[in-house]
Length: 232
Length: 232
Image (cartoon, rainbow over all chains, first blue to last red; front, side, top):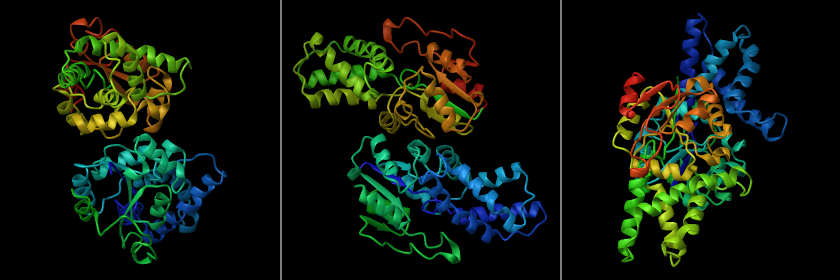
């Protein structure tokens, strides 16, 4: 094993808590009480249908920043927020570039980096992932964003495109993720797999991914435990 | 200014001294005295014509690892080295992944990283640049290899492709290089420029790039001085 690829949203950073804080602060500035959890959960729920529009050719290639902005704009009327200005919508969309890591993420990756090459393999775009790493201190060796492949996970072009860039056989690459669907795809394309549960990712509404649902190569409770399992 | 892109071979790492050491050690193992400087200088001289074969369509897209291997293979007979085995040719080619940085490179980049996003913009391929960073400790935020663009510098696709990935206007991006031709191209495409002289890059045979030959935005003697000029 030479390269560890990491899903990022949910697996390494706590997008929900971070975005709720952003929305609460934004509401305070506007002197409005916003239902932060409802907005964030709706925003995240829009993620899959938005990517599917791209995957099915209803939209040309569109990066995640742009999909986030589009999804937010479409849902604003339902929250009586139709009066937000374009710069305000930009500001909220940019909050996806500044998400806090889970408490074990930086420490675990720092240990893993001694022995392996580490990179995100995320549906985020390259610039978003660069900003996120600067903000949260994730110590990457390289950045892989969906815009490098012009495909979203779980399309094969992402997993196999990453192996090709590293000039490494899929069997020497591990995908680390908190989501079983992502690991299933990686395994189907010949990569190794590591599951790290994030049972509070979706808050009280979380309904899945509490445990491994496949025969993954490694299962750990957090990134520090994973580092131990991998001999770091 | 948000993003600093760095030429790598010559600008940050001393390829000539490193490769000469590799060849000398290789000769010692084989119990042969090799003209290390001559071999390395010929190998590096093959670089431009090899890239031109790709640029002019005489070769399909071919990454730098493969060009290095091809160039070495072609010149072996001239040095009475036709008996090298394919694994030995691979071993020598891989030496380009393990080059020592100039003494100021890591310290300068570490300071610059506090304020800017740093990435190589090199004709090396992504995996070569990742290995090189691991070996030499260059603290990149992201890696840009020529294989991301399927073009070699000074083609516009490289400079402008980098700006696009970072979602940053060329005027907010600085190319740092020890080579005037590279800075000239970057400036033509709207990027800012910083020249750092590396007067010993080519050893006693160096004939150019002793000083700035254009109106570059910044000129420094090393990366630590550049960090100072840029307020880091």
